[in-house]
Image 1: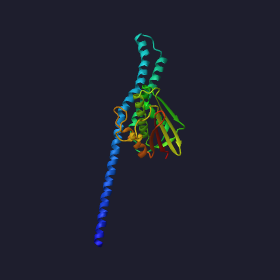
Image 2 (image 1 turned 180 degrees about the vertical axis):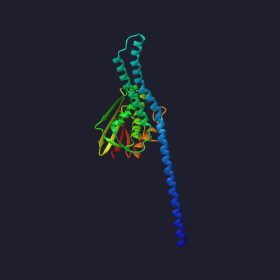
Image 3 (image 1 turned 180 degrees about the horizontal axis):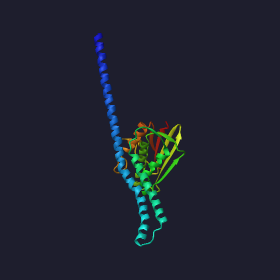
Image 4 (image 1 turned 60 degrees about the vertical axis):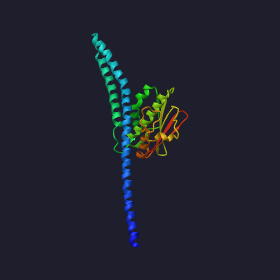
Length: 266
């Protein structure tokens, strides 16, 4: 009898160990899947980012061209060039090329992999993010309002935070364009409450016509977005809730979609 109980106990221990190993394997597989989907999300953003680079650089390139035209005309017509005029042109060119260089840095930083959580100022990261996407918004005459009560500091993965904002804003932009919304706008509001940093992104695109609305966070779910991958918002929720211990939610306001990001300050 004692031997039987001992055998049962040993069998149970063996099964428990097998179960533990299976659980570890499944957890490891899920982590690999999350990493893969995160990379897929990055690559899905790459096409949009390249489009944004063209938007961002088109105007500066036109400005550079306009600076050279009068110099070329004077040289062609043998009109003497004033040194002060040349220096002023060089100064303007330096200003434009510096802006273009900063834009490339913003794109490069966006695709860099965050190694560890760091403390960063939210306004600085917001400005860097907006610098990436503002060209596409201007092309479609979409007004962007940013309201920040003060410049809070956050501890987290700053590039991943930017990726979430870009995913939400790009989705809003696409809806505003596809629905031909009159006087389209996107508003970002940031404030602190109860030791949390809250980011609100809202638009006047008419809202999300999906029920339940939380379905937009499902992997590979696409809604009205032509050629969408369906992983942008899924990854956004994963980043905020798994990587930054926060909360990402959505609802419809009277005018459009209303996304809310809550992240603890510490």
